[in-house]
Amino acid sequence: MQKTIYGERGGQIETYPIEECRHCDERGWVLFPWEKKDIDIDPKTIHIVRSRPGATRGNHYHPRAAEWLCPLEGEGLLKWKSPSGELQELHLEAQTRCVRILPGVSHAVLNLGPGELLLMAARERDPAGDLSVSDKIA
Image (tube, rainbow, N blue to C red; front, side, top):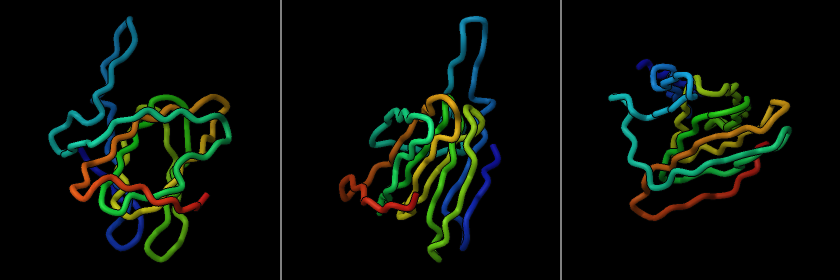
């Protein structure tokens, strides 16, 4: 699975395609976004985020832990702050890729679609304790 890196100075965001992780039949679908060998994740928490059209969620960062986002339904715009302070953006579409936001990167997700945006999110373990720091960027 090929990862793509976005952002300046070595990147702050990594994406991984997940088409191969989705299994469909006449009953619907099952998605295992982190089942590939080259994705190493030991989540502290897995949570579901649902946002209304036009709503922004996030506006925070995790100083010592990466966060993963996997869009399940809808479309959104991931915004993050680069080391120089510049705002970066990445379009998110349901069930196409998962995104890893590196520790210390302020981020937010805007729902761009007419319906609700549904994300599965996971935060990696932080040995010093879980911490989210508010940082309004969007």
